[in-house]
Every structure is written in C-alpha cells, then in structure tokens.
Length: 198
Image (cartoon, rainbow, N blue to C red; front, side, top):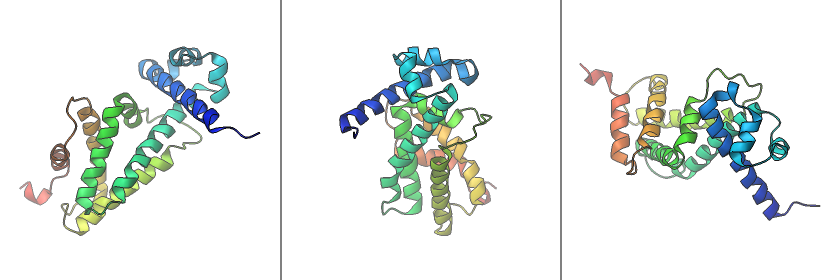
C-alpha cells in the first residue's frame, strides 16, 4: 500500500512541529537537561508520537540541525545559479541568509551556535554546511581573482565568515529588512584590505 501525498504532508507537519517544540526546549535547557517528555509536551504530542519519529533527544537535536542546514542550502541555489559577478552573488547569498534568519531567528542562532562540542557518530547536516561553505569560499576566490575582493588569503576571509553570519543573525532581529548596503558595510568591516590599513 503506497502512502498518499496527504499522509506524507501530515507526517512532515508533525515532524516540523516536533522540531519547533524541541528547538524551544533545547534553547532553554540545553541538550543535557532536555528530556523527551518536555519535547513531547512543547510540541503538543504524546510520547508515543514523538518516539514514532525519533528514538532519542540526540536524534531530535541532529534532525533540527540537518533540517535547518538543508533548508538554508536549498534556499541559496537560485541565488548561486544567477548571472551576477562573484561579489554581487556573495552579497546576494548573505542577503538570502539574512532573510532566512529574519524568518526564523531562533533556528539560525541555534544553527550557528549549536554546541561545537557535541559528539555525534553521524553528522548528516555537515554535508549541507560543507557545500555552503565551499560555495562561499569559491565565490571569495573567484572575487579575489577578478579583483572584486582584496587579495587576502581566502582561508583568512573564510574565518571572517563566523562574524558575518552572526552579524546577519543579529540584523535579523530588526524591524526593517536587511539591505544590500547593510551587507556591504558588514563585509567591509570584516574583510578589509590590509594594504589600505596603513
């Protein structure tokens, strides 16, 4: 018997509700102190439903990360496949990340701040994270080659990304949407040409 589209949609909605509820629990309690009872309660389901989808809080935690990074990565595809130059594409990518952060600030803060010390045997979200970082590094390298970014070590530029992302997440808290000018200012603060700093 095949599963109908409606059943698949309902399953996805239930999983989304569980992940949203769990995000709130993890943000207030942390992974160590969170319990499956609290996750079930926060998402409005019984434990049976929760256990049907996830068999541990670690699995729920990993699912939030995978889901979040996959959604972010997917949203960037149309931007990356556009016909703009590297710097403009880079700005557009950051604008898209800022838009995502504005829509779900709690989730994005979690994605970029989730405990780095978490030891998971499998880290399925890493494939989206690595693709995204690889694409961004590629844009920086193309931009340096074409003279659109200062001639810095792309690894060094890449290290500035953490600051860029957190800046965008914080910008997402504002009322008005983040503009290209805001992003350019952020880039200029973090990526400055050392030869001009003299």
